Image 1: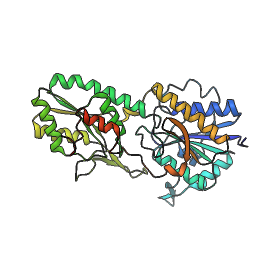
Image 2: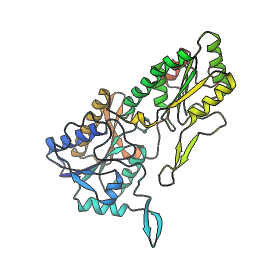
Image 3: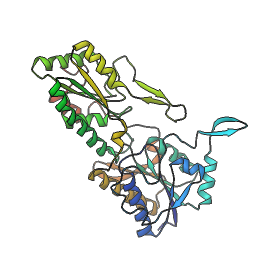
Image 4: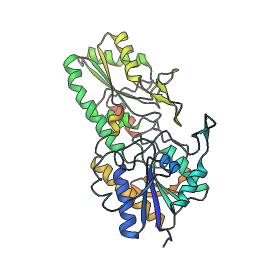
Length: 367
């Protein structure tokens, strides 16, 4: 049995349905099974930098299974490796890892449970190399964390996106329009692929498959000539045309990822309408996909991930990431997921199935 007595837990990166379910599973398993003290770290790594900690109890983590967001708060702009520090009236970006280590020691934390995506796991891996035991739990609605077949939050995001796509079918059919729904997916098109197939979208545009606008327009025209006077397009925010670039919404120099994507749906809508003469509208789902209560599948997955994280820690594991592989929950080194993304392979069976039923991906493979 491990000699660990006191642990910290934080949620890093963007919010995600199921975060509270993991917090609940981690805290209750730690307290009820292993009699550990559990300390909540507020607002991700920002709380670790600023020494904002508070003790969790069974009462404080009860009745949060169904809640969206995170009761601990989170932050997707802060990393200890590059944090703004003001000195002599000037702000400089510095590595404040030493400050985090001091706060971990001052609060007598024996280990950290870190819930987040690739950026969060990269920082956790840095702490592991410095002697801090971290167990990671994979979180991202984009489902793009390397090493795991699925992350909690993804299925809820797909459900939300699918519902939106279902709803625009009726207005598209009534007005004989092309309706474009832009979903999240910076470099990985998992949400667009799954929601697009689930909703019967006519066109699915992914970051992994650069599209040819002419092929998309030809496909829409062909549908119209066959009496299908509307088309539904599901597009990832990170999709781009052949020999073109992703559409950038704005730059945020305060963020570890300063480039913010967005606007591809509006861009494509204008181009399709101009080239086909068919009225085209676009919708951006944005943060709607992150919000609200997690669906049952994500509540179950988050609970299993959280309980497994504590069992790994108390079983003597160090620097591991809880993952799902081929339907089984297991674990890998945190460093294996560091700085990597899990993209949709072009050979994925769902792409093949979608092509077989006539879905257009805007590339040369489409007929």
